[in-house]
Amino acid sequence: MSRNKILNFFIGTPAYNEDKDYSDYASLTGPLNMFFSMCLLLHTCYLVVFSLFNIKMLQLFDGTSVILYATFVILLKYFKGSWLPCTLLTVFELFLHQICSIAFFGLSSGFQYLMIPLIFMTVFIRKDGKFIRALRSAIIFLASIAFIFMIIYFNDYRPQYHLPYEASTFLLIVNCSMSFLITAIYTSRVFYSVDEKRSRLDESVTEKDNAIENMQNKIIIGFANIIEARDGNTGKHVKRTSEYVEALVKELKRNGDFDDILTEQYMHDTMLSAPLHDIGKITIPDAILQKPGRLTQKEFETIKNHTVNGKKIIEESMADIEDSEFLKVAKSVALYHHECWDGSGYPYGVEGEEIPLCARIMTIADYFDALVAKRAYKDALPTSVVFENIKEQRGKKFDPTVTDAFLRIREQIDEIAKANAD
Image (cartoon, rainbow, N blue to C red; front, side):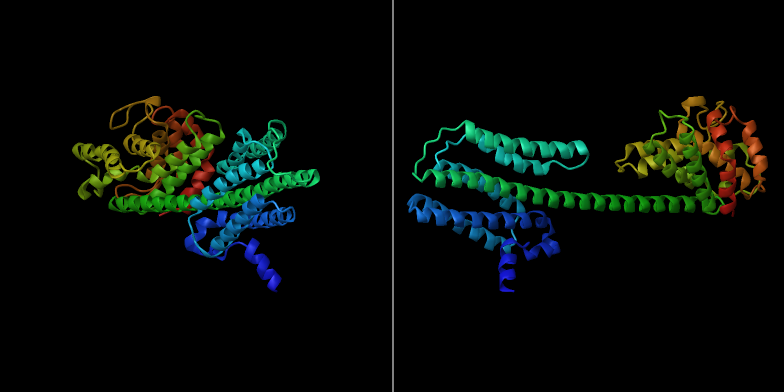
């Protein structure tokens, strides 16, 4: 039991890694603890060898190293410190230690020692993709080979302390081999820990982004439902039109229509904007919005303003949203969803491809629902009649390509209408 405790003290992960307030240190304190412990063991062996040969300077050097590493192990085990100074100290210690220890064996210092911090710096290369992982491994491998090659072939051997040839050669091999073994284990553990932490962080960010987007969608739909309630409708209109738009967008994409426009982002923004198409109705008086009979020309002109007002509301109320592409689509849907392919719509009477695609999609979805749903001023029409009406309006009120796609998914549209009937 006591042996396990001793081993755990020297090579176990410091207990405070489990402390949620210090979780940021967990990716480095474990590898650092192992690194310091292995260096402590290595320099203890060196100290014994140099003591046998009675070389005072090297005894002093390695005695200091043993004390230094033992102090590091104890401090790291019990004190919660910032990971950045610990890492910088480790890199500096390794860099300086290699120069000093090799110099004691008679090898001049040189460019090769820059390979050591280079290996440590690769920890900042993310592991995303096979090419990046291969690149990181290649840098580590080539830096290690370069270090060993330059140590052997580009240094003058001028020993300051005379050891038997066998002992000197043995210590040189052990020193270089163990130093790189320790470095390799340390960096691999750091890579694993940091990569794991990055993965968890990426997952956490994705989850939060999804949660924020879901909340945003609910707020948008809730706001749209309130507006529709003023029009005498239930929230089913918002739900139905949104589902029509989603089904239509996916059909257009499936059929290869508008490939240059229908990116994943554009599809997402169009579907998200659908509930906001009538947001401008909040500015229309109830007397006009809920009038059971036919509107006068003046009242109809007032109704038309909901498109321009809708664009203005989105512009002003969502000005701080960073997603400029979503805002562009949302404003287009609100402003142009009553425009017609032949130019007979409002508010501007634009025609054809001058009307943004997102609005042309919204137009047919909104029109279909307006006819199949019961309103204060009219009865609901059978879907079969509405589909025939839409077919007749192909190339007039509606974009021909969008119309064809809508008619291809007739059964799906029917199911949505029935499932969400008022």
